[in-house]
Length: 122
Image (cartoon, rainbow, N blue to C red; front, side):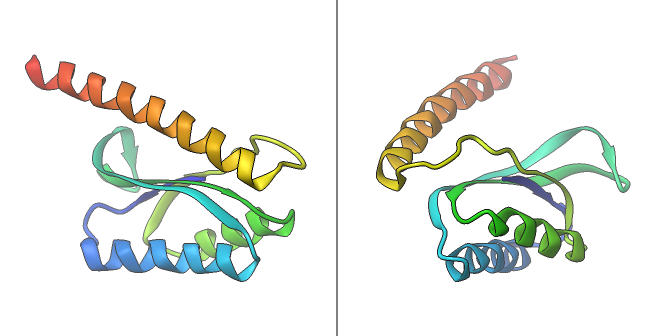
């Protein structure tokens, strides 16, 4: 799950929204593998008159009802301007999936940091 929060909210509201979604994952007995706050970034195109947004990425496992409930809550929350849920696997082993998610996330973070570093040199 990747979602974008409005840039004008403030850190306390961002934290409250992230905690609310994390609590839903816990309530459905899901397992959070990665919770990564990417920070504020420029949007590719304006969304609801915003040119930037605060990006957050979750990698989690849970029962089939969990993504639907998360999306329902997200649709009701005005602070989230976009979201995308992607199903990565069926019938996973939580321990193996956690290891795989952490390795994937580290590789992705390294690539993102390299791209950010290249962009700052220009």
